[in-house]
Length: 161
Image (cartoon, rainbow, N blue to C red; front, side):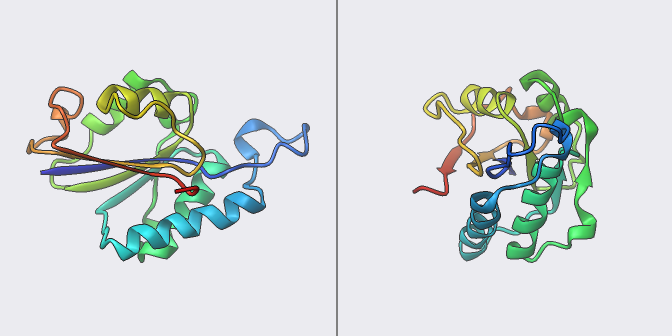
């Protein structure tokens, strides 16, 4: 069984238009929501084998805050440049390229591609607000099965729930 978490970055700041997109920080709400969502995951016993993040500051900060809450070492977060300014197909390629020894992985990134991929895997999920967490469990033994097999189980959570 493979468990995939798609996590959209928490709310970011657009206060300073001179800040490049990749360097936009989380705003106050984002700094609150990311640890809160991590605490929810921790209470439900989530223990991922790997966290993979976009290099954008808002995604990486979300990953770090969530990692702290679930007891995952920040220094072990993998950064994948191809997650930034990606596409659902490229995200699937990243996921399908994961080591099959890993059983549970969290990927942190951006809309619209996260919402599109989430909707493709679970048509009942139609949007991916900031700091939303979509969990997919697949009965396959290989990450290459993601997007080929339908998920056996889907959970979806947002900070406002």
